[in-house]
Image 1 (cartoon, rainbow, N blue to C red):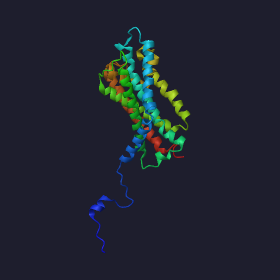
Image 2: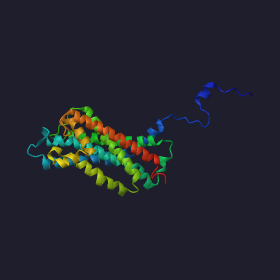
Image 3: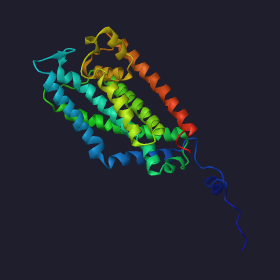
Image 4: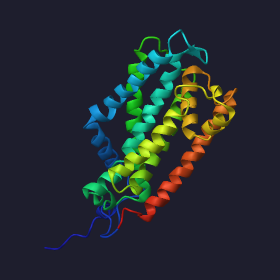
Length: 284
């Protein structure tokens, strides 16, 4: 029998042996990593989403009872309405950090780090997958907290500037996701992760104006607060709900804070990418 000549359509459908079939971006691999990370925390959603929402809700209850009596008002609203937006975005940031700081660290501790390093993913794709999943967890926690707080008596969560809610919420989640990935690269055991949480993330969150306006502080401590990026996330996110902020007296000050957070996240993303590319504490 004579063998027929190969069809030109077959040659177009099947590339020559050894030629990569992926494009400049491994979309399937990136999506697979993202879904793997999302499913990992979603399997234990009672612990990763609903428990943080309940814990954040308890903050609102305790501080409202302790400090919100006597019709106390801040920025023209009652105390519960003032503190609720800050608690929502604080929950988003803390859980974005918790997710980002676990993946690579868990791989190192459990001996499965090869599962992140062997697949045909670039360093940028690996970073995008980890950060994307962490931001997703932060957003889901924020939605859960928002729903719970909207049902709390006396809390008004009407949106005045939706763009500020979206921008500052995402900037806060991205910032803590990147910090979490950096922590997971550096950490060698879960104690190191807990140290960053307890001595960096928690203090910066609680001392960022979540429960007060910095105008009540002495000038020296006001200056220190303005060096805290968490302050701009929380105050800007609150601006989206209340239409007022202690970042500055004008909307332009809020815009400057928004742009500053964008620049900070860009720098932090480049730093995280460069560290990840070196393979420091990952490929050893």
